[in-house]
Length: 248
Image (cartoon, rainbow, N blue to C red; front, side):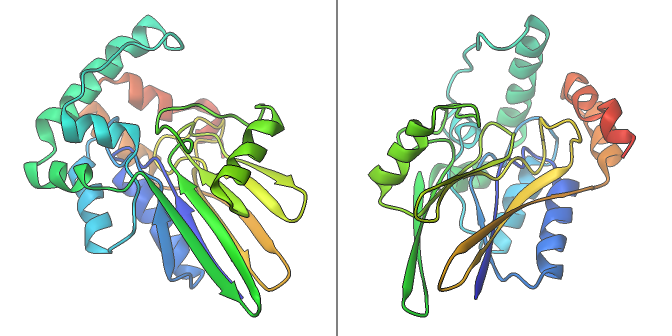
């Protein structure tokens, strides 16, 4: 049996990252992979990036990492309200001003995709890691997407599993012959009602792959207060301070 952990979308939320890493450690899982978006929306972009570097966790380049690394202009998105659009511009500018040159260099060199192959007994399992899709790190693929979209990704990547992030909403979709399309959710800016930090555990044996979405609590108020004391708009603190999250 082999187990690996996959997480994504930390977005500068250091307390959430530490909670996830501690949970992975308690489970005895040695191999960890990150699907990107280390920065933006919480004030610990440098600390998160340096932790990933220090632990040598293989990490992909998310769309936010790319924007900060190469100073790409921010473009308004039609799905955002005026309030979120204004907050997003300020929050991303905060990262551009505070992420160190060394960390920007690290972000600029992250890979776009990562393909894994694990051999368990006589069985090889092929796992394709992407931030959002095979062709882009800024495509929104939700659980409601037509199954054919994910089936095509599995076929094009010649993999048994495609694991993605980006949307901040976790899901698992199974296909024939033990194939899966999985979103591991978000560590630091979950859009799920509970706002818990989310990540994926994959357990592989010779017969099958067993995916588990893990959701854990973290010191959310610590992150909320840090956002409120930074130059990041309180919009992102209010987002995390979801009433349903505080009731759990």
